[in-house]
Length: 337
Ligand SMILES: Nc1nc2c(c(=O)[nH]1)N[C@H]1C(S)=C(S)[C@@H](COP(=O)(O)O)O[C@H]1N2
Ligand SMILES: [Mo]
Image (cartoon, rainbow, N blue to C red):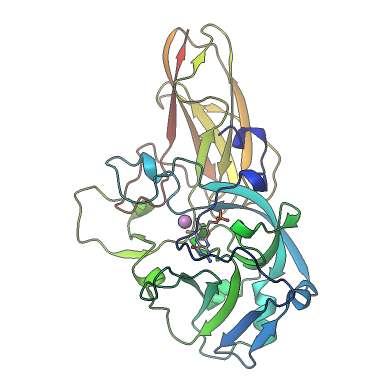
């Protein structure tokens, strides 16, 4: 929260890092590197970084958020990486449109999905290589991109040098790093990382009761709106009888932020906040407000995001057994003294 409090973009050297498998190249020969585009296409491509760099460049500000961000806060607890809210970050990404690469290869009629693979590998050969797929129309929407720069610098190795997929508005499980292989499929991808892993209940907010069974699941996809207070740590002591400044960051999910409201009485009454600069609909948006002076005692503070599609965060926290897609409001309790 200290880092998020400093600005709307997350510095590269403070950005979270996550890989599934430990077999990750620690150096890459940029001159020898090739990106393959193959499968259900007119002509296979093997593109150097120079060739990719000559395609039209696009830049977008977008939040990279792990599907399991905040999993460590799930109640009851669930297995998996015990993240608090730090497995997200916002950057300016520069690259080329995936559509331009696919057009160069010529997608053949009957294409259904596009699968993405990177240079990392499982630690034992029987384990499934990390690969993710998007539907063909999504892959060609002109927004999904192959990025080579992050906040004006080349992609850091740990964030996917030399290329990573960028799927604005979608959880970053799809943002395949060290992207080396793009395969157009004439059938739906049935491998582990689409069929078994990264699935959420097919329910509103992907939420179920802890005892619930027998529900349908589907691949996780679009992010949901979220808001976080960044200037007050949990259990901080604030001044009683003095106006209380609040600041934070929010994301709309798969669209922009429309409004952030805050409550200091557990959600009974809400105050509007002032929004910070608009860096685009997939970016973090900052907000701030000064609350009327609290009386001495416990104060529970809540920030709540409404996105451009009028989706508002639920007051009750969401839950599922994989700890994905947390979407309910977050509460920060402080003491006024
Ligand atoms: N090649 C590859 N790309 C990957 C992954 C991976 O294991 N291998 N993990 C994904 C997941 S689950 C997340 S949360 C993001 C993390 O991106 P970051 O390390 O740049 O923050 O990378 C995604 N891309
Ligand atoms: Mo993730």
